[in-house]
Length: 194
Image: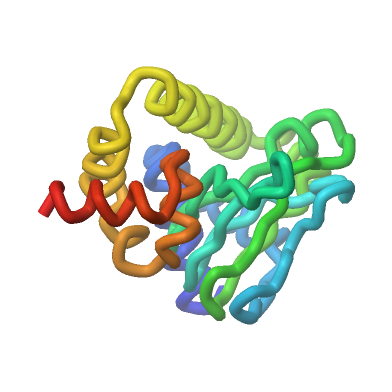
């Protein structure tokens, strides 16, 4: 197992299920596929079926979709994060969410079918699988609540607090769409937040 893979896998596991034993970690490592990605590369296109859970080893990814001709960012994912198009992967139906590399980097893909098979044989992998899905649902609910109940300024301050690297590394247009505001509104919010 290469060093970056070991670090990324341990980071992803430790965020979701730190109690996972060494044997389960090694089993997960045995099914992972390493992929180098280029900046701007689309890893999953609209209409494709998602077959992988993706762990970010190095770089930044975003999930996005188009609505009324506008590009809307759904999530940003950094080193150690797990990217899931949950509906597509669970139902094995075409996705409306796309995945783009915002930076050149390295990702590790966990084939969903192999992960599911391992989860039947290993309690540790089963718990990790469950914790990944739970975390994904919590993140989606938190984001929906933010859109519904927070002001533009509150959404920006929450992003600054919870994911400061996104503020530093992502293009402003993507940050604005993630926060459901125009780039002009984002500029005004940033000026008052500093």
